[in-house]
Image (cartoon, rainbow, N blue to C red; front, side, top):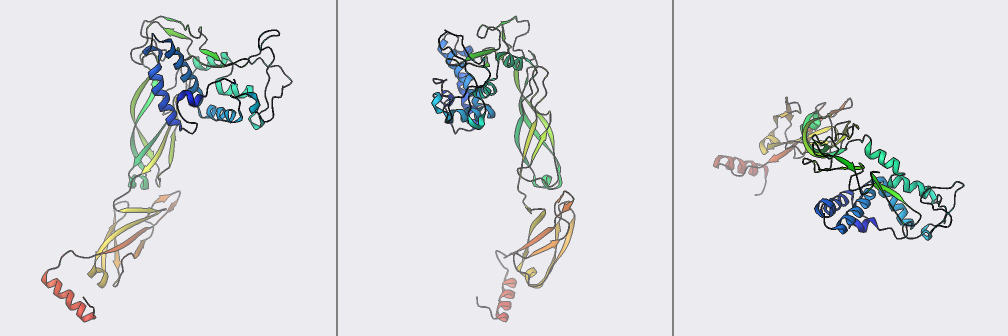
Length: 381
């Protein structure tokens, strides 16, 4: 694999690119070089294969990690990159070996790469193992797409619990072709690219690995006419709305996993999951501090000076009366016990914080009263 291409260079991203950046770039390139859009350009087909090969590794978190580990150790730039060198195992390996007298003859066995395990095992886990296994995966039941989505939740719904509607866009098996990519009545024939195997072998010298065929998408066959609904992909993008239960006391970042509510599985496979992350929206009246609620209530100068009573709504809509003692200063808090957020058998308090408002303008009588008060108090103005 000394001359194996750099998958990051093939996709056209840096090695620090995020999964979303890699996916976005792959989709752009795949659309540009897809064989259906470049039927008279064999170079475009080859480019499409390279792109698919690269994304098959970089688009999978586990495979990408293993690829990065091997890339860092020099596995794709010559065997000298392995610090400990090659160590043959006690058992022969059929992984790309050739017979005696043939070019590149020799038996390649597992290489010791420290904690990474055998090189053969790494390639097997990264690229799908033997051709039979890869074909079995592509033809057998496949688990549906897991969908992750952030949902905005009103403050009071998050505090007391409730339900919020969520509109999802997921990939599901095409209802017209039932996932085989063929138009109704079309003939199915073996794929010429992979000879019906569903996988393509690639590599250098004595190394060979397998990946799903990009032409037939791992099915091993292609239709005489592609499905017009899904354009031969076997999948359709659909939108649906579901109601999500929000537990009482939920906060921003809280996740809910709904089993089987994601994308529909292919070939009878299990449906994927729906993972919802809550983003709790601010409230115009309440703020939250743990399980306590903080409500800001404005009072005027006379109320703060002479004392007063104010009414405050609790989270459940009830009104409670609070006594404001004379001489109350701005920022003072009054506690209403047990009227906060309830979660896991515990309940916080409602903290009422007062602010003092000053009138924008005074009538003559009000201004005279204020001046009399200031004069009597010895205040300068």
